Length: 322
Image (cartoon, rainbow, N blue to C red; front, side, top):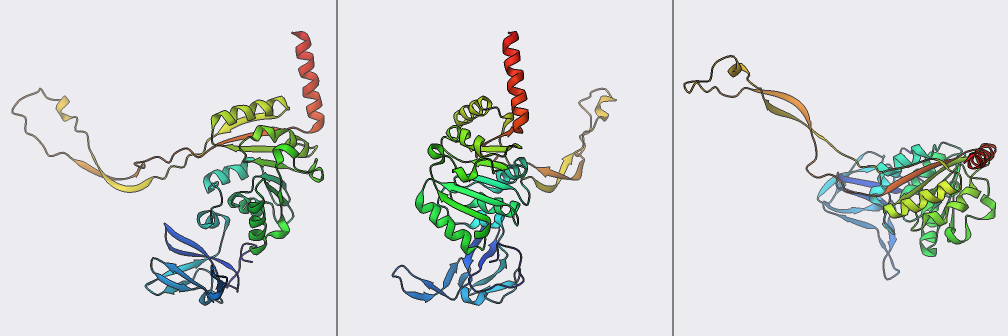
């Protein structure tokens, strides 16, 4: 499908992003028929603020082209993880692109990486993970909610990404990630209510050559407990950050020029008042409102196994000296 590489034209069953305005973007299925609530097959028509779109008419169209609606027009775009994050059906609270970009960079993901994710949720981050590790890597994603796991699996298959991801229904805090993943992962990502309970299991799943871990938590109390557990289990380079995006508006503004001539002459009531001189300049205007808190990102590194033994011996030696 269209998520797995770029294509020229829309095929039957593809997911297509319909762009109307910057705040009106939708993901739709390019198929002529759909099943309604009464389980009957009907014509697939998508309603927009600019009129109706018969989705079957998308088939054969070129991605990026203009499409006519009954009361206007829009553009049909190739789906990407970024556009999917904006348009996906929400099953849970999701992670957005500013945090996603930082997570992928800090976990040092690349094609061929083996990654563990918990939980899957709505699959926003999962799509970005898959793009980062394919074609030779693999994502193992877990969710404790069975219906969400099943829906995510069907969604990945529908998007043509099933070969790059394994979806499992499991409570990783209680049972871990499975014996088949012991010593297999390059990185672990946790988005859980109690991430510190999953950290010991993550330690066993990371490769003997070491790896990176990230935990996303909305509350600082979760961060404190997670950092404490990471430190206890030998993780190094533990850091917590918060990504807050600021969008500046570039405008031409008139800025008053400060006239310092009054310093050269004595003050007098008869001084003639001059019209203030202004200078036009291009400047960046900060937003009137700053986006609020999303969540804290905690990152840490597990060093290679032989290095961990050296650090343990050094710690024992330092305690002996004390």
